[in-house]
Amino acid sequence: MFGEAAADWKLIETHWSELLRTAISIRENKLSPVTLLRPGQPLPQEPPLSRLPRVPPRYPHLRSAALPVRTRTARAGGPSGRLSAALSDRGRSAVWVTCDLAARRSGTRGSPSRRRRQQPRQNGAMAGSNRRDLGRVFNEVPELYDRVRPRYPDEMFSDLVTVTGMSEWSSVLEVGCGTAQATRSLAALRCSVTAIEPGAEMAALARQRLATFGNVEVETSTFEDWDDRGRRFDVLVAASAWHWVDPSIGWQRAHDVLRPGGWMALLGNVVVRRPGEAEVYAETADLHERFSPGSPDWGHPPLEDDVRTTDGGWGLADGPGGLFGPTIVRWYPTVQWFNGNGFADLLRSTSVYRKLDRDIREPLLDAIAEHIRTRMGDRASRRYLSFLRIGQRAER
Picture (spheres, rainbow, N blue to C red):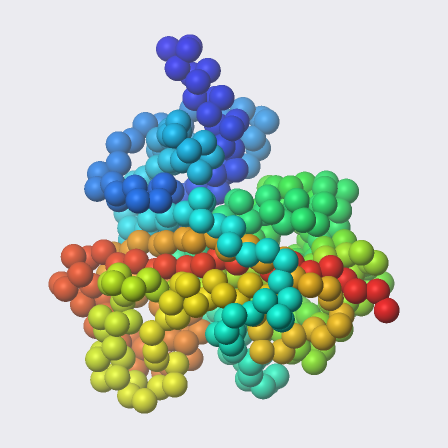
């Protein structure tokens, strides 16, 4: 008994960050169940359960989590062969997440000359007023957004630390923290974090999620209007948020609030597809056209290999010019699995569907959920390339 307990604690210490993220997700009723699988590992149908032992004070963010969890490590392949499985008994829509760690590093230092073809936009350009209005639609559904949106891989933050040299003495500014999905990982690094979020409801939920951290402050404001009070930072991070910032203001302001030698980091998740794989839009294109015909937002996700070629620059239509140096790019393949209702909830949390009139959006999403239940075995995937783009502040 004691030998098994010792082995359990050794495993928890080795993979504490994975357990932390899973525990917070299930404890706060955001996501269940979650499974991290090796590349090619079949999806479990009925994962066995065991109960996580009481968490010692060394891991305060897991304290009293009491979640059912089973974790084990595959010997082959070292860290890239990690297998963790967790199942919540809360009765939410099923969600699985797989992360292909072995394939995550295809990007290196980039420059415009390294682009093999025109970059597909990862985030489109839009007018300033439309940008702000559309960006605020998430404030209508903060709990839903927090529950279904994809997380950011732990390896991404390890790479962020390695490239920037971040430490517990570093100061970090996060622009557009949302419900603190990336903020929690930044806070776990024990650096000082100032997080800005324009949505009052999103910011309120972020403060709740960050209540156990004493090194984070959440301020409600857009980046363009934010009062920096003369503060300067070592690293600026924007996770799936920078495309909501007016580029005519944002890039210069980012340069200004960073200390000399500081770093800018953009994090995000690009929806992609692979040839031959079933993909929900392809399966439901007729439904999209029936309920909202001719929408310019409808279309197939880009191919994963095409997105991987955008390993230079910032992946945006409006770049920073000479304000930042060459970018370092990393990719992290990730997959979410949902049942029909869960996939509809995911779409319900995105700006493309939120901007539809409710009388169009809800019947469309109901039809998509029904299609997944009856035509796809009530299981559908959403494939992403999570990305990290980092550049150092240029000195003039």
